[in-house]
Length: 59
Image (cartoon, rainbow, N blue to C red; front, side):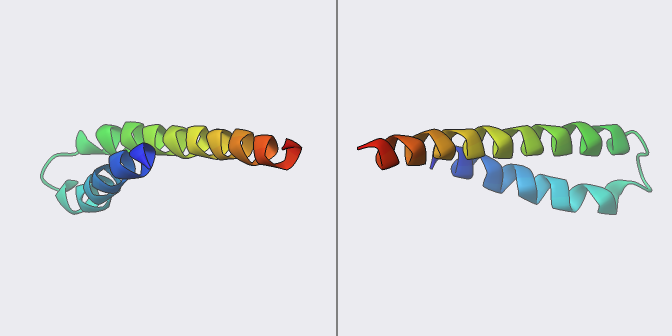
């Protein structure tokens, strides 16, 4: 749940950044780094869910 709370504002920022590219081309780097961070958080979330489900199957 905590990761989902962290992801919502990051996804909002990620969505609005392309509209600002014309004014500041340097934002493309921020957009790329932020996108990589979001994907990393999704992978961490998936790994945690995998551990939880694996544990529940063993019970």
